[in-house]
Length: 140
Image (tube, helix red, strand yellow):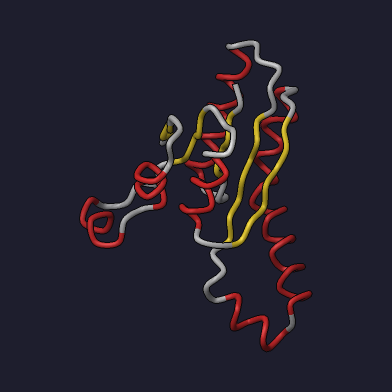
């Protein structure tokens, strides 16, 4: 089973990685777990004009390494094969697009926001649920 786990550095995304690792070990799967982090690039286009593309790319690489560090440690400790995908763009759209291209399951951390905030602006998890054609598991 090919599992995609979206990672944003939050406690709930780390819980999602831990659950994915446990699931993979329980199924005795030899498949690779893919960790994905997406950086919203709306504000980055403006920054590129002032500091240059190379500076922004370096910043995103450092940020990605920081966000993925604890998640990668979980998979390494469990002895699970893994890889990473780092992208920029609309977060929910990017996750759905990658998931629909060959994963069997998407695991997301569900952040605890109020129902009113979710109704007004929506969450990444809700948008992925609406656009992804693959099974999705939300972990708190």
